[in-house]
Every structure is written in structure tokens, then in C-alpha cells.
Length: 456
Image (cartoon, rainbow, N blue to C red; front, side):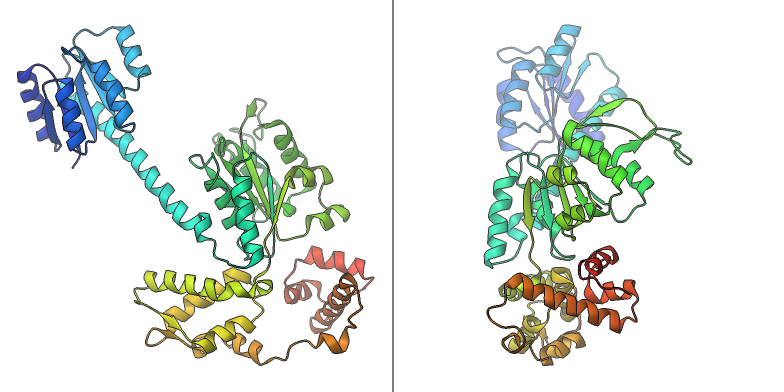
């Protein structure tokens, strides 16, 4: 039940308002003066204050100023029989939600009160959602004790306070969007929107409309004006996921926004100015994309002001037990399983698996294990069969096949070339299938084929 404090120096008026608001379903408190109202506010959790303007000792304006100082989110409605435009302007400038003249109709005051309470509920709801987002996406939720993850967390906190554009790279499933949200939530923009768009999920035409919006009639089915993601993110952060998938023409338009912070909606002529912080992500190596002519060099440098590379899970094995414990706790709570434990043998199986799907794959495996395990104990039998198969596979004997004096880059390129040859053989020279076996995109495979002078 919403609580309302009515303040007026006329007791008869307080009695009338108490009856009216009580019948409307509100819990009503009354005060005969501004000083008494402050005492009630200090002892009661109020949702709204309705105060007369003209009172002895402390006027309604003075009470408003003090309430705004003590309780910034508490809406205040001022009433007066001496209404003037000047008083209304003064009240609104000092933070009053609204201003109403006596005498007023009961329906009028009830509608104004309902609007004020809806506004307060929205503020409280947004604050609660912000806390939930912080709990879910804040840096405290990015699990990892490996050196590389600790370095990333430290860099996230430093770069968050700047206005710099950030490029986050890494394989699919490593948590690039989690990093982007953490940057936003640790920045001065945290109370503004975080808007994301997957550049690989839409065609060029749809992506352009999604980013910049469109005017009514701009194209077929454009029956109304629609704001784009840049406009919706004004004051906040825009996360461009899979940015390498943008067409060259669209890259030019995004470059202009980053340079000028202005654009036109599709089909429009009016220039719209925005203040947006961009965080971009890619699971490709953008430098290679630039060299291959698929990505604009000037856009790359605009995005790559600060670069965060999230290492694949197989390169930071020390994080696997921590992540497993984190996901066990999460899904045990969601599935009301009580305390769930994991055996050392199951942990060993997790450590020996290469995790091509990275953290996302690990989370899915743990969720499944929490649901299927008996006696709240995860054993190797609760894990997918491929984890057991990986544990049984022998490790690569690099001492036998790669001389110690071989330069690292040369050794890695040799291994990469052999893996591509093997994938092509196993896929019958079908590039799409070979790319899937290697866990890369078809376009990246084609680049590697040219690099190693391989033909299919």
C-alpha cells in the first residue's frame, strides 16, 4: 500500500483529504506544519508528500527544498489557493512533481497522485534492475584467478572511467559481452542505457536500419518512424558484437558516427547528434581482416583505441575449477538442488577437455550435470561423453615433432597448416564443414588457404 503524507495548516482540510485518500486505498499520514511533516518523513517510509504552499514558519516551497535534500526520489505535489504562474514555475524548478490549485475536483487530485506514484515506482524499479545487472554483469561476477583474467579485470576498471572506444576480441563463448557490460557498469554512464546489437544476425539493410533507425516510408513496411540503436544508446554504451561482419558500405557509416557523433535515419535528412560510447567485439583477428581487405583500416583504428583480448579457456586452465564452482552454485540455486558438490575425477575431466566452446560450453556442461547428478554429487558419469574421450587421448609430443630451437611463430604456423590439411581431408574438401571442424568462420578459412597456398 502506498503511503501519502498530507501537510496543511487547516485541520479541517486534513480531515477531508485523509478520508478521500483513505477511500482510494492509500495509507495516509497528516501534519499540521512543515516541521511536523519532516518528523513524520523521518519516522515513516513515504511514497508521496502532498503539501499546501502557504503555511506559517515553513512554507510549502521551503518544505519541498528540505525534502528534496533529504529524500531526492520522494515526489512532492504542491497545493495552493493563491496560484500564479510564477509560483508554479518556482515549484517545478525546485523539483516539485506537480502543482495544483485549490479548490480542485477529487478526480483531479487522484489522477495527479496516481501519476506521481507511477513515476516513483518506475524510479525504484529501475534502481532494482540496475542492482540486479550489477550483480549479474559487474566485475565481481567475472570469475578467474589466472594472470590474464586479472589483467583484463584491472584494465576494465581503468578504461571504464574514460570515454575511449574499446575493442574486445576472443573466440566465441569467452565472455566478450560480459566484459562490455562490466565496462559500462563501472563507468559514469552506468545509469544510462546499455544497448547491444549482433552485426552477424542481420542482413546489411536490416542492420543499417537497426543501427540508425528509419523514417516512416523509408522502405516497404516502414509504417512508422523508428529510432535506431545509436539513438537509443544516447548517453550510454552501444555494444557492437561481431563487428567484422559489417559490410564495407556500413563500415563507412559507422566510422562517421564515431568521428562526428552524428547520423541520419534511413530515409531521413535531419542530422541527429548523439553521445555514445562504443564497445565492439569480434571473434576474428581484425588486423588480418584489414590485411585481407575485408575491414576498413581507419575504422579498425577508431575501434582499437583500447584492446582487450579474452584468452580461450584452454589457455587458462586454472580458471576452470573456479568457473565450475560458480556455475554449480548458480544452477543448484536455480533448480533448488541444495548444495551440489563435484568429485576430483570430474574436475580432472574438465581440466583435460580443450573447451572449443569456451566458458559458454563449460556453463552448459555444468548446468546439465547439476540437473542430472544423483545425491547432489557430480561425477564423471554426469558429464558428456566427449569429456571422457578427451581425457583418454594422448597429449601432443612436441619434444619429438618440434625441435626446441624452432621459432614459436614458425611452429604454430606449421601446426595450423597441418590442422587445416587434416580438416580438409576429413570434410572431403568442403570448406564450410572444414571451418566447422576447426571452429572458425568460412571466410577466415579462405584467408588461411591463401596464406598457406592450399587449394581445394
